[in-house]
Length: 195
Image 1 (cartoon, rainbow, N blue to C red):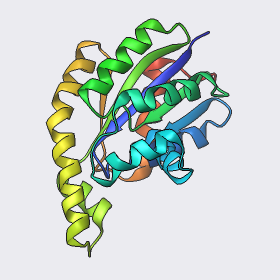
Image 2 (image 1 turned 180 degrees about the vertical axis):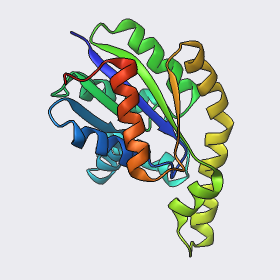
Image 3 (image 1 turned 30 degrees about the vertical axis):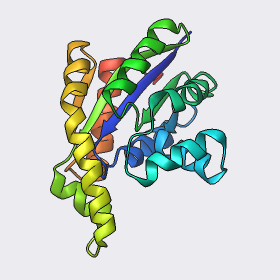
Image 4 (image 1 turned 60 degrees about the vertical axis):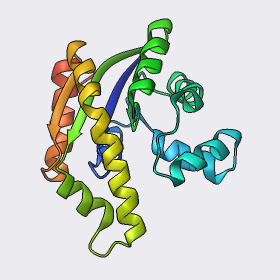
């Protein structure tokens, strides 16, 4: 049986990693979460081959090329202890999306069943990421990340809408409401849970 993959996408500060973690904790034993951001941080910290390359991109606020992380990501999905995998932070660009689409097309082990976008305003994203007293460097990095995100999200949304996979959730709500909405969507739309 192929792994059922759900992507959670959103701007920096949208809360996608927190939402994914809470969903998997709520359904321990049924859902595994993979955070591509956390995976890259781990590789950078451990100074692996991938980590050394990724570090150069991350420090500039640039997207890490998909081919660098794809092998590691797919390995983790295939080896996940559950049949349902929530993955946040990927794809982050059109090339990554296309590369992943091609890899999924060739794979019998993984099936993409849904893409959930946690949508927040730039004001909310800024507040969550930077807090009240950011340095100029932090502000500049955030603005660059948002610029990159905004330049890509329209085409990503359009692609997944055409595939009838996209669900947009209002990330301005409180955390419990967002998690409940994601949970309800996965349960009714994807018929993923046992109970």
